Length: 243
Image 1 (cartoon, rainbow, N blue to C red):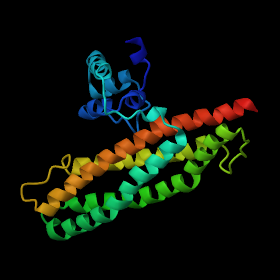
Image 2: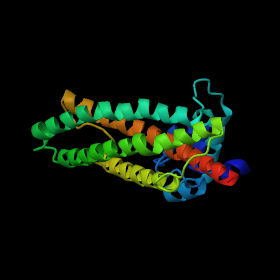
Image 3: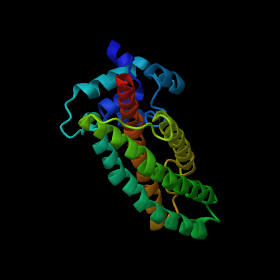
């Protein structure tokens, strides 16, 4: 119990991603706000900490054959995985969702005016996420890979133009939180992605896709905030300690 008490919710999810479903069940943000303690989130959600601890303990005690231990991956491999899995997913789904949401506004906007706000929110998300991912792919991820290579070859690395890896990471985490907040609004406006009784097939498919998009975003942000970024900061400190 004492070791569990000291972990943040993000660290629990990094330890075993199955705990993410438990936190989601209680509406606890484990990705953008994963640096909070169990006691803190329980207080905000009016949950008994002991009950949540017991459920976490039960999950961790159960063997999970299919769980991927991302924490054990080399950082360059994890960065590649995020880019090729989650970045690519976002790039593929954005144009489809933009098209569907525009259609819904034209066909159903008169009777469901909330669609216009949902559409505007997702347009903002599409633009911001596209820029965000490019900054990671062109600036942050290459530097992380350079650090990994340096550890394997005993090379020295020059100080990057952004000073320390903490600076771009802080920016990425702030942008993650902004997108997390944006999807909280989308989820509320869609009644947690529940289509209305008069919804056509496109309506239902769009809400289902938005739900899937948010779930993928949670996994995406979790891998970066709770694993990749944390370990990148530690890796940079190891270089500093050698100087």
